[in-house]
Image (cartoon, rainbow, N blue to C red; front, side, top):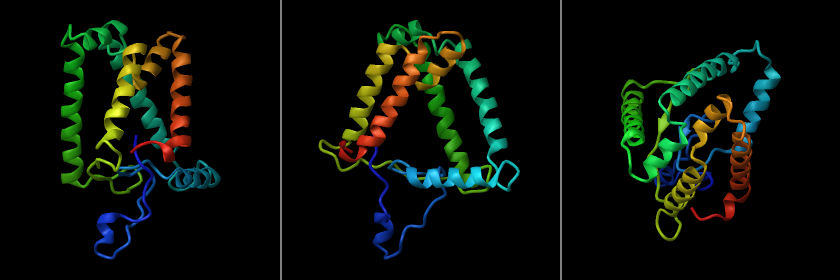
Amino acid sequence: MTPAMPDRDPRAAKGGREREPSPAGTDVEGGPPDYEAVEAVGRDSSEAGPGAEGSPVLPLLGYLAIGVFLGFVFVLSEVVSWYRIQEMFRFQSFHMYGIIGSAVVVSALSLQLIRRLGLRTVRGEPIRVTPKEWGSGRPPAARYWIGGTLFGVGWALLGACPGPIFALLGSGITVMVVAVIAAMAGTWAYAALRSVLPH
């Protein structure tokens, strides 16, 4: 749960300099993306056609291949297993904690490599990662503990988090269609109500 993106960076405002706009999807900020800007980028890309410069078709195929591979990993490692999820929440097994812990380590190392090597996106855009902010909500950090609590309750009841939902659906667990629809509805609801929610 994050606040809307400010028009000016407060850190830049101290020096009297406007914050430079970042390419859509490349700047990990404390707030959600500018949805209108993302839609405009999408319209421009679709109007340009698949053969135009900067066409997103090839990168999307790469993402699709990685997603399919990740789905296999989820199933083979039993991350999608309802029983494994229940074991984790009941502190009966180290299995899920080991997987999540290894993912945290890999993510931390990857972010360090991105910073140190100055890696860029497939379109050559810089990848900038900024520190998370506590937010202005009361109590402090409400955006994290309220969102985390809701996420955890949903995870425990459903027995799956967003990624494994699609892996389960692909493995033939058709009831997960309901979970996918509910997740999309929740995402839409947040986008519609984010201006009145605590951050």
